Image 1 (cartoon, rainbow, N blue to C red):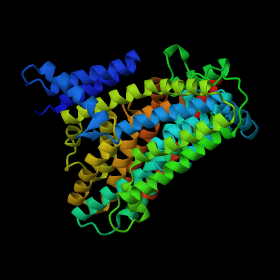
Image 2 (tube, rainbow, N blue to C red; image 1 turned 30 degrees about the vertical axis):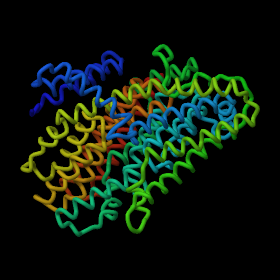
Image 3 (tube, one colour; image 1 turned 180 degrees about the horizontal axis):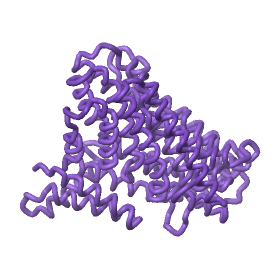
Image 4 (tube, one colour; image 1 turned 180 degrees about the vertical axis):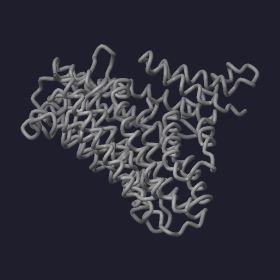
Length: 518
């Protein structure tokens, strides 16, 4: 049955409860149950049917179509492996050694934050890989400089998806280019090739551009306000980089204070092995999935990200075990470390399972289709880029998936441009990409938001609430920049408007934060 505007009830209910109660699993669970009851309300024994549907969705996370689910289940396995690697590095003294070494290279809080952001931009192959790797590598250093885990999660989240969505050599870029190629073929749009169009759309993705710039501005000018300021002040004054009163910390093995003398290589070699092996497997799986000549674009289009992460993680885990055994870590201590690593990832895995479940429920309710149907072809053409940015943002926020938003909204945006003005093709497609990332950043049920908090070792709700003000500010700047682009048709004027607003915003935030410091 058609649920219309009521299809927004489960996601909005879950989101409001998350913010009010601070209990993520309970809130998501309520949204799941309400959504399942809505879907099955016309069935006999609808309560049993609803519970059965939820059970089927959860089961499919692990086992589907007669075989292992090679996406969600592999991601869960990779999280467990990453937890074990991080725990072994910690218990062997690697995190401590790296922190002491890095203190001699990065001597200020500003330099540490900028270094973490640069690392986030360099690992542009995949956002999952980026979020987890950058968080784990940077955490020992940010902890030593009393930078809150919430601040690190913001840096990680705000550099991962934004760089992946504008990089053609990434799992995101390759998939988006493929979707664009299909849209162009459908509408006989031949002015640009799909790759060329994607590259031209990069500067039009105002949200990604200004989000990345804001990360560096926040680090350099110390623009900490709202909930972020609370976390930063606590970290600076007490040394507590995370609120330990809120229970277990995802990704934290609680072994970081191990007094064992370690080596920097205990951390660097496992991480290097993880990056290299995962990259190699992404190429291998991409070649295997490519029919005909395997160009670089086709390889990244067909790569199996989840499998590559799992295989790369296994290689890194084996190397980590060998290193810690050679460095005189006992088998008993290694066993303790492995189990501690598994336990450290369980909170994040629970949240992921609940998030994936409510995303399936939302899909069944037709929330995305309802939001997409709001688009009216008779809206002023000048408003289309800004309107599509907002709509894509609301959709990604409500559904927790930027990928699902891409799949629904990009073809719709292409249809609108083809039916009205072909010159708007690239601006409206860029607006959808930007809006999807914006909504994804704001949504507590987004998997990338969950993984960013996990990689940084932050409580999930802390990351959501501290990042939200920054995302909303960049979102507002992006809306006005898209309005300028839509009215004038000029990318440069759009960037100019956005750049002026960004500069003024940073200036005002600087004044506010300085006054708060007095």
